Length: 414
Image 1 (cartoon, one colour):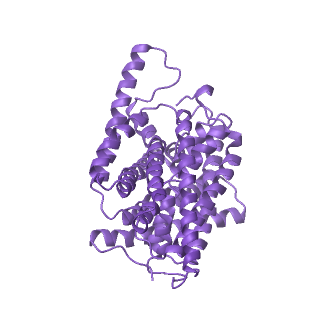
Image 2 (image 1 turned 120 degrees about the vertical axis):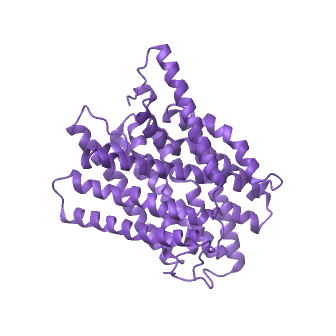
Image 3 (image 1 turned 30 degrees about the horizontal axis):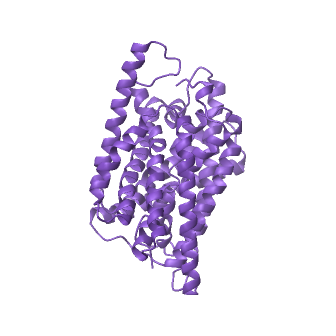
């Protein structure tokens, strides 16, 4: 993919894109996740997980730049490109489709999240009707060609999301003061359901798969690590306080969307407004999450359009095929969302399998193959991160899958 300077994103636009892909429905699912681990274990594991994930994000960009310097004529725009070069073509294909399944899983969750929030506010319209109504809007958004063009939507979505999080924290703080007790009767740690926490928490880092693409779209890639660190700090504090404060304030939380949970607990119109705002924000985020999957498919199908395309007839033909393919892809995620049940456990399953592999396991594994020399500390941290991702992901997948297949109720932390 050749990206012209005019289509590249500056540091501010890149920051907005990173924050938006980082703060989505996964953030509002963290109170549910904290319920599964306890008010001491959950924040401690979240801190450890955040440090590992953001270290891995920087590692994958370092590997990308290292390979690009060694092979200036080759393209390393995705996880698949990097994996294919280091591990072989077949592994590159496997990683590509792992990324695709992760991003499409996120998009499917988005398609369920939006109707859930809208129905919580306008209960007279069923979720199935909302799903049909929003589908054309999401189809149109995915027709946008460049990530730079999404920055305008990203800015609005960032503002709406941050306002919603602030309102949630204010309600949680007010409720906590009213209760007059901090974490009263809540467990400090719950080992039995901790794997569900792992899956839901790692799912919150849903933007990991888009990191190489966002880096590729940046006008000055040398500034990427600085922008990533700034965005990471904002994202972490949103995660930490949203999860912890809501949990210690409201106790056991059953919904994967905190705004939908509050709609069941209060009839305050502000919460209704927040539900609508989050639905809009998530809708505007959908094309960014789909971009990584779209890029892989379009390159495989030969319908990726470069900025240097000059032949009008070729451009029109390729653009028509591109629009048709993106429409079909969006409708596929809509149909998948229409059949989703037990959303909280499915989020945990997606996080445990796809999220842990992309965010925790793959970067250190690729790093071990890309570099010839390591410091002892670097080697140890790589293996600690890899083992943490494998053990946590396996445990989370087993627990979530067992409850889904046996039709058992959502496990409760005690």
